[in-house]
Length: 330
Image (cartoon, rainbow, N blue to C red; front, side, top):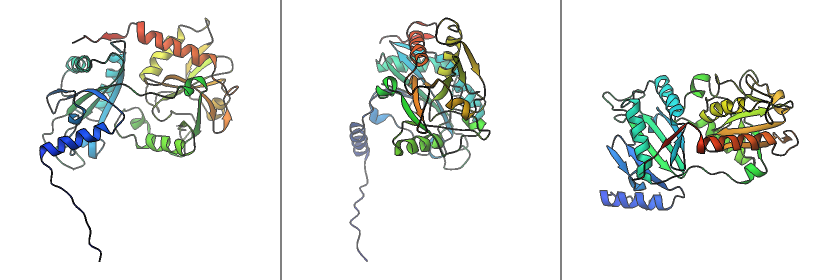
């Protein structure tokens, strides 16, 4: 039998830190600031932005998260995101480590420490470390984490030329898990991997009744031939904060632009395919047009006026609307 030449070192703390710094140096994403209730404060060295391996969020997916945009030194729509965060925590039977106001202050302060004026703020809640059991360890303290980073970016062609998507072969999440922003995103990951393998940009979930659901980590919406903006019901898809805000903003434009109405309803696949425009909505992508679904064009196969108008409407609200929280300069 051949002898293995395995050479596994036992590392001291200095070697571990050096290895973590080397790992971060090889990764393209740069993280600006990280708060950890487990560490008891904020770090700006990405090598120190770590969680215990036995945290229940790591090995069982028992955790939730949410994301808010940082725009021009202000946080956009944070209260709506916190509403969803607390709802996800309740459904996941996770305890909050503090009052809502205290968590909000931590998010704002971590953003200030980061010194970023534009980017994204992602925050998590876990049930804590202590064992590898299915249920949280006895006496485990919930973990609250905040990461401030440059945000996700998407190809310019998604906005200029539009996206191409496919109906995924993976099943949509059951309603309880769909409306809870948990860290277990396996169906979403598999959908996106499937689309990329097919040379496409994203996928579309369809529910058991044949109605359109959502995309990988974004909501879907449609503009009918007569100009009605239609969004799937939120009972079986994530209640996207961007979608909810955009629907409100869009209602104020009905009759004064490209839209004639706004509806939240079941959307059968056939009706979606017959739409004039198909849209992806989300806090990072904002509004992007879909021009092809399963190899067939949507509308005339080009980005439409509603996508452009809604993107402009949202970006204006993100910079000068009434849902902004100032981040102090430190």
